[in-house]
Structure formats: C-alpha cells, structure tokens
Length: 173
Image: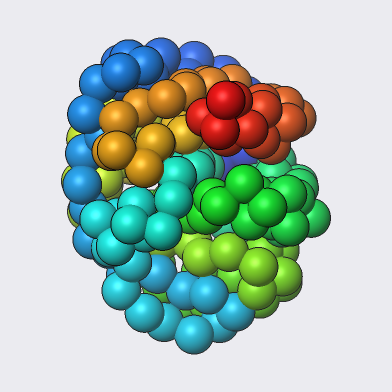
C-alpha cells in the first residue's frame, strides 16, 4: 500500500530542483547502509579518498522507477569502477528494507543508505516537493576534491546512469 501511495503522490508532485550548484562543496555525511544485504556505515569522506562518488537520491525502494534505476546503476557499475568512481543510492527507507533492496534490485553491486531522519536528503536539497519525507530522483557526481561536479534532477529514472557516467568520465579529462 505504501508503494502505491508513493507512486500516486509522485505522479502529482513536482520534484524539487537541486539547489547545490556545480562547484559548490558537497555536504559530508555518514549513514547506515547496506551492500548485498550486509549493513555497514557509509562515510562520504572515506569514499572520496578512493575517487569521485555518484550520490543518487530516490523516493522509495521497490517502487517501479526506483527498481529500474537501481538495476540500471547495478548494470553500469563496471563502467563507474573503470573511472575510479563509486555509487551510493539514498532514500528514507529503513535499513531492513534496504537490506532486501540491495540484494535484489542493486544486485549487491553498490550500497544504498538509510536516511531515516532525512538530514542527508535535506543537505543535498533532494526532497520531493511537498513530500519532504521522500527524496526526489536527483543524482549528483561529487569530485574527489569534494565538490559538486554534476547535478541531474528528473523523476524519470532513464538518463540518470548515462548522464552521471558521462560526468564521471569528463572528470578524467
């Protein structure tokens, strides 16, 4: 029922436009996350030491668009890794839900973070319009220097992977 209500509300909600501009410092964060059904603590500062990070926000696990997007990111992980980049998906879902989502939809290829208090979502200005308890579908590429290198906000899951991959690739130039 929650997923149906979320889908209906997303259809009438307008996504918030990402306020973080290219070149702005990316907010640092630490959140509980799941990778392949195993919980751990994701630390943005640690991830950035290894390379750029794609931080993508999505409304709710197991909804149609979010499942499509997660599978697209999972399929593209070898390309992100070839550019030295990592990916984390973030929603306000609880960690138990994300343990399942990370196994099925994310195929154990990248972590998903549980932003229950929505602090990360708010710091990245990724709330879904008036539905402040859910994230908009917004993708950021954060350079290894901790700056916003690219922003894409669109409720259609198509395009997020291709556009963030191009942005990650452009960082190498």
